[in-house]
Image (cartoon, rainbow, N blue to C red; front, top):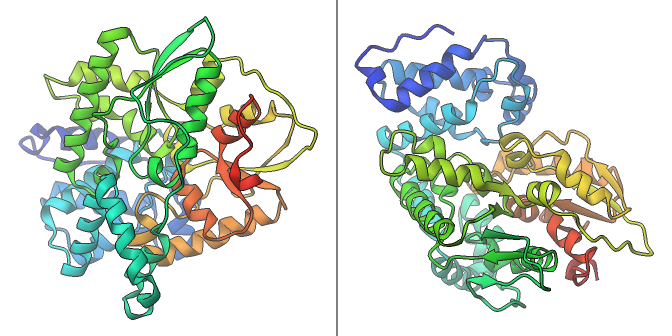
Length: 429
């Protein structure tokens, strides 16, 4: 693709990086074939190729984003299916992140839209605000019919009760037995640790059982991904910097073998810290190290541990949902399937498994109409397999899919914990 940036424009680091990505694009359009929004809406501007042209035009001409451009950029799920498909290796993730950041800085959104985005930005990464909001939702839920559709969807998705935690909250979880073979940090997530604490508990139990010490620094709040994808650079970077410095100091104290994420959306962003801070003299080396240490929990288990699997009498049919941020964002797909196959269950890959379920961070709130269409397609494909339960590696997908089907859905780590000596997951009892 030919570019027309001026020399002064290319002194901006983001423009310089994005221009290199633009030049890789060969206009082939293969990306559109696997783009969920292009499949649904059939508009060139609702596919990766069209969005690349819109962002290129904005950046090269220093244009104020207009309503039409913002509509098409906002409709992007950031599922990165296009990156798996692209034969030219176009890093669409960095292009769309740049586009969203540019829009956030240069576009005046309607007041209602601005309020919703601000609410999500301060609520989801902040546990105390999130829990307080959920109690408020509990009070207004009987009157949800009075609210606009977007608010109704938020009310529907917001939990009004929280499961009881079974593990004490502490910073270090010691390995069981005499032999400690590794030391890892675990990102416990912002929303996840409240709405599904069993995911972190299963992760810690499994790792401890196999000789791995788990460190959970109390200073870590959120990976920063949510604000990053909303284009809110300052808020996202506040969390990024805190995380990088905290994990770096923890690594210096006692050598971390890995930093684990059991929420694939978080892991994708953490692995990108090195790129995000490539020009920051203070954080560049630290960020690169943190990104290199980051692994999805299934990736780490597959590469580093020999799991002590205890098979069960009953053989289950398990539908494996490969989260977009995992299979497209991190290129982690075969590893969790291989781990699940060791349980001696029948592991089924879902038809059109490369297509997003519609969760995509805050997408199922901000673009609820499209998200519901994608959910319906995903559920139909899952139920065509008639599985006993669904396994996946991302809390967003779990929340989204559970609103569309009665088939139980749980995190892959809960299944593996159960099959290595942990308790049977509550949802399967």
